[in-house]
Amino acid sequence: MSLRKLILFSMVAALCTSWPMFSQVNGIEVGNGATAQIFGGKSPSVKVTDAENKELASIPIDQDPDIFVDMNSPLFKNRYVGIFAYSKTNNTLYVLHNEKKGGHSISAVNLTTNRVDKKIPGGGANLLLSSDDRKLYFYGVCHPAISCLDDDKSVSDYDPYIKAIDTASNQVTTTYLLSNEIQREAFKKRNAYYVIKFLATSENRVIIQSEVRRLWNGKDESLSDLIMGFSGNSSKPIFTLNAGFPLKATMLSKDQKLLFAAIEGNKKTNGALAVFDLEKETSSQQVLTDHPTILLRFGAKQEPWVLGNEEMRAFSETGELTDKVIPLNKPRKQTEGSESSASVFLNGFPGETISLGDDRAAMLIDGKNGFSQHRLALIDLKKLEVDAIIPTLSASEISKIRTDRFLLALTLTAATLGNVIFTPNMTTFSNESLAARPDGKFLFSLDLDGHEVTVIDVPAATVVKRIPVNSSVYKLQVSTDGKHLICVGSKPQRINLETNNLEN
Image (tube, rainbow, N blue to C red):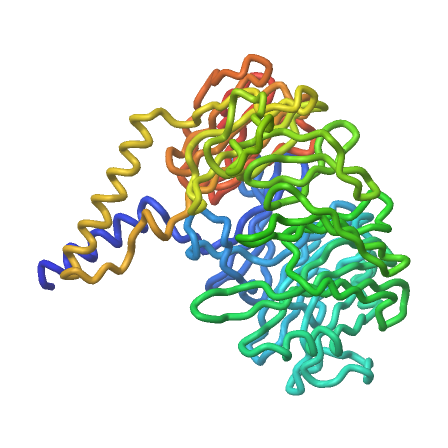
């Protein structure tokens, strides 16, 4: 082996050691601190472990789970996460498979009896349980070589569809047809395709968003969105709304009669908040003073807010903008008398945001390219201001991370005689994860660069502890009983929310 190849092999091995590519998909909490994880390979199985990572059950599944690239993982484009859904009512994990002969199937894995109850034909890019846990919806496309239509002769070859499964019997109850308008919108543009997203589901109703996207000039851009609603046993939509423009984010009103959508602006115009009346099939828009990024609900009353790069603004359940505005960054353009009274700003871009009790929120701060700045903001929803900015890593730790990345990129460049094959500072996103105690008094922030959980006393706005965690941990979630913080990874760990101590 040449010296260049030896150096390259050593660097790749070091990368795999520090940033492993796990064969299993991400786990999900299944009650009492237990976690279910799905493994592929020679012996595909669902394994259930307790909070101390002791195996409780290993349930064989007859083939590998279908996988997709998790764009939000710490290994950008390198960690593979399975497509699955968990029904708490029936204690059943639904796992999507990609059949060897084409098509998909779904295994209903009963975690009470530790066996596969049924293998259901069909499935595609997404699985979603209804809000009442009684129906499982999945999206797919029929193919003439496989039998995915059951006895439904009304669906043509290659037609997209959504099917509903009764989780009590694991039987397909309804097939909803999507074909005509969705394909027509996508086929209008060259190199266009469409993506189906579930917006809302219940036992007898499902609302989906079909986003038309296009690969053009090296960019993957959004072109327009179609909103469709289905109800009961009818295969045809009860309404179809053509937004005519890309939707940045969507949210339903509490009564599910209105759909709120954030419309991203361009260099000349700011964005807008669109309101679609799903019963009257009408729409309206209100111009925003900032480019919106996401729609979220905060506080005890779950008030809706639209978040932008410069500010966040509350709006009503009818879609009317309110005068409750929280400045996040200094405005790019200021008119006379428009200077904000806020003294604390993000000096960055809003990242993951969560509620903290009734009147606070926490927000991670990202850079323009999506990298974590290793800082977070505490937001007071009553005073309408950013309350504090708290670092999750020290300046020396951040400097070391940047130096290590630079040296790694430099070494790889030298090993390949100038042909850069991997640049960590460009391809690895350092997105973090937030979670909070149910009462909002303590906030937990996982930093994936430092492999630490930062514990923050919210009322005092101070860091009280930093807890080192396993390098496989990539997500935080509060247990269903509200007593523990589960650190999700190939080796799950648990933090006691009363003592803020790592238990295992």
